Length: 86
Image (cartoon, rainbow, N blue to C red; front, side, top):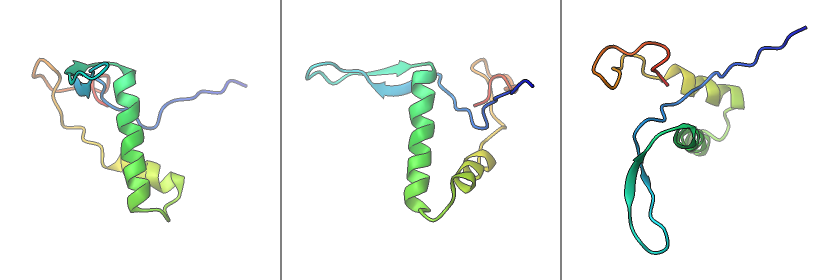
């Protein structure tokens, strides 16, 4: 029997403003990729956990899923499809 695993929550990881300085320099860059999407989603879940500590993991997941915005545009200004949305 095959098992299919699919994400329930995904996040945008395109042009995220992030700290990028090394040593003592202060620098900011726009960075893209899963290395940007994952910490933002984890941070949102951590804030939600702090705000609602009695919620179960399923309730937290549901809150993230049910508050997602889907009426967004792609980087070229056209309506985003499911492959563009996070």
